[in-house]
Amino acid sequence: MIDELFTRVRTAVADVDAEVAKRRAVSTVDAVADGMAFAAQEFRATLDDIERDTEEISTEQYAELHGVTPQTVGNWIRRGELKATREGHAWQIRRNATRTLPTLELAG
Image (cartoon, rainbow, N blue to C red; front, side, top):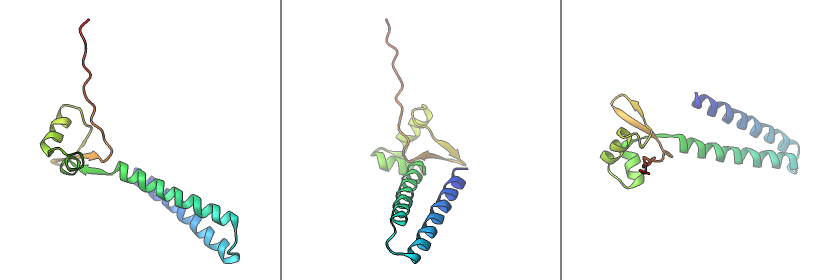
C-alpha cells in the first residue's frame, strides 16, 4: 500500500518536472518554472527521507545501527519494547523504530 503511494507521488513529481521542461523550452527565464522546480526537488528530498525512515531492516542491521547485539534486539522484541513484524523466520524492524521502556508503577 505505502509503495503504491510513493509511486503515485513520484509520478506526480515527474509530471511537474516535465511541465518545468516545457516551460523552460519556451523561456529560460521563468519564475514559475523556477518555483515548480524548487518545490519538486523539496518534495523528492522529503520522500527520500520518509522512505528511508519507513524502510524495514533486519535485527542484525538494527543492532549494528544502535550498537547492541542482535540477541538484545530480539529480547526487546519479545518483551514488547520494540515493534517488529515477522517475515518468515526473521523479524523486520522499521529503521526509525525506537525502543519503548516499560513504565514502573510506584507503590503509594
